[in-house]
Image: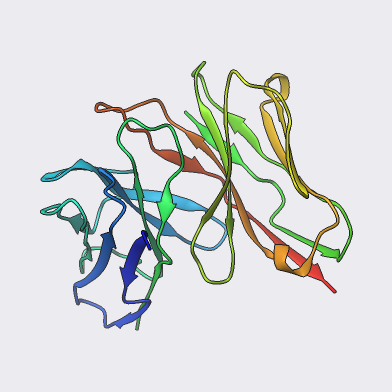
Length: 113
Length: 118
């Protein structure tokens, strides 16, 4: 079945450590996105990528980094520079030139201890 | 700037009641898209509907219906005869204009948590 796989589902991190969240899609979508979800604030865009080897900052990119070396993969690294990293992270993808919907993964919940 | 407001943080109803979730948006664009997503406890956002700015016809899909009114910049969502399985967080979203390459990104509201009790 086609879809988006995020891992790990739950992750605990000590302050000062970097952590990488995985996002893999087999939908053959060109565009991929990372959103952060906090209680009462909806979803905010961290980074997006329209094509391999290219990505742009979203609204809250500070303290995060991404790479897009393969079409199907768009990992997100939460660095120690991110001041409040505890959140629910959602990856999404979309077809090129399509005004249609985003397809989402099931999310990764990061807790900083 | 574009913005989506979902003023209802939480709604609680008893099964079989009708419930309306409100969504108000702000945009300067003449062409835009509006969306509703459902987020069940599993966490994944599930697409419900997309509406473009030139189509103000209301839409009905089973127990779900949507009322789009450009005059009031609203895109409200009604669930008729609610069921326990409807319990979830519901998000309204607005698309920004196309970026280079033909893609757009979505601006989400804060979400409304709906609890349907037996």
